[in-house]
Amino acid sequence: MSLESRLESSRLVYVLNGPNLNLLGKRQPHIYGSETLADVEASCRALATELGLEIRFHQSNREYEIIDWIHEARETASGLVINPAAFTHTSVAILDALNAFDAPVIEVHISNVHKREAFRHHSYVSLRADGVIAGLGTQGYGLALRRLAQLIAAKA
Image (tube, rainbow, N blue to C red):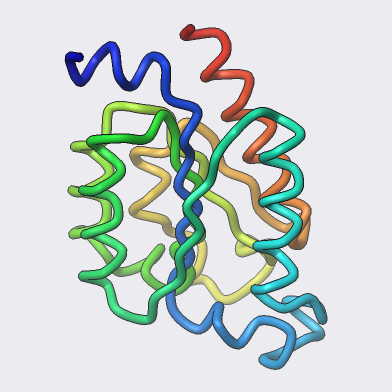
């Protein structure tokens, strides 16, 4: 089966999370809320089942691991949700990896980065993302999965 036909039938979506999101619920709850990353993953898995999607959910504080997961997703996934966290504002390498990914990408930020420090207003990832969700808390992940499900269905 060709890569193109495999991707057309795939319902696999990667959900990637960047640095410090392992501290979700503990770090700055006044900004990021009290839900943990495990809570977010459980919500994503439940919604993915409802939407007929399969997800691979990952978090890393290491840029190269996120890049490796994007490369892995190129071979199997039909979409990608990414909360690059601080790498949003610094990583040309993640942008380059996303530019080699030929399926939809939705960028998610828990906080409204535009109401925060000026350096957070720029996103390298947004240059590739098909959509950006910011400031809707952890609900942004569910909205991103719903949008990807629509885009995947439209392509099939």
